[in-house]
Image 1 (tube, rainbow, N blue to C red):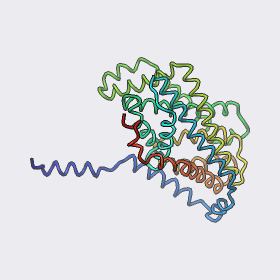
Image 2: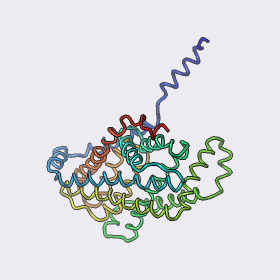
Image 3: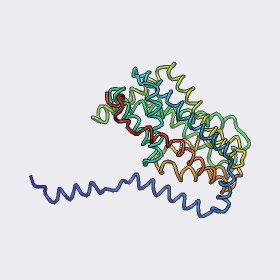
Image 4: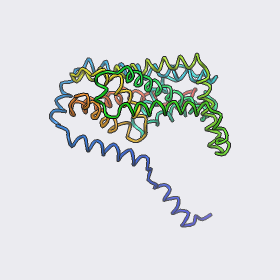
Amino acid sequence: MPVEPSSALGAEKRRKKIPWSLLLQIVVTLSIFAWLFHKTDWASLAQRFLQMQIPWFLLAIFAYAMNLSVSSLRWGVILRAAQKHAPAAWLLRLNWVGAYFNQVLPGSVSGDVVRAWYTRPQTGSATLALAAVFADRFIGMGALVGIALVAYLIGGRGLSLLPGMGETIAVMSVGYAVIILLILSPGLEFLEHRLGKVGHKLHDIRAGMGMLLRNPPALLVTILVSIFVQLCSILMFWALAHALGETPHAVALWVVWPVVSLFLALPISLAGWGLREGLLVLYMGALQMSHDQALALSLLLGATVLLTSLPGALLWLGIHRHPLAQR
């Protein structure tokens, strides 16, 4: 049957449709870097990298590798809470693969989609697999919110220097609590019924999250693992600051970095690049760190995450032929 010219033209337009989310990420990333680089002393920045202390850098890589490895245990606990099972080695491999794709694909959750895709055989459905991955990320973010909130409430002389930090943590804490209430509330059921297939998927995701939140032993384990994982992230930040010859302020470790990490979950920049740099230059500058030093620290953080995630590319090779990906 011949294709009508108008139909062919429509199909061509759909193929060439601009991905606005990607365009936004590119614009945000490049705009922030343009602003930062305009104020950068390039000779000073290069000198900081040349004088980097390698042992501290290696400690940071180890800390982030621990972060990626241990967090796979949390994922396994979440699956078991949903009465689904997957071998720990399989989840460990997928966690590294997901970390790699988070770095090389647009958005901050691309790796989560990959992880959910390859655990469909174990969960029995793509929706439940996605719910488990969402729960994994959500509990991890909760640990960050908790660390930042407790550190802020304990206080310190550096807190008053951080612009808008109290309001930021308050909004994050309230927002997190509201999401928990929405997950557990039966009040959304009427909306799920009205949304058709989307409503069914939303129901499955809420049900999967609800099973974890209503399972105190599993929830406690995931919280404890999440705290350890975020402590590894804080250790990475601390080690990289020392690699550049800085002794980071306690507020930077326990408030600034957790808050910046939460912002990086927003899919508004390319793998967090630009957004991380802008926030750290802002906050660390308020704590009396120079522009070039804060920028060097942020770039080194991004490079460490990227380099440590690269083994995920090797682990991805041939993964579609693995028996666990096919059964």
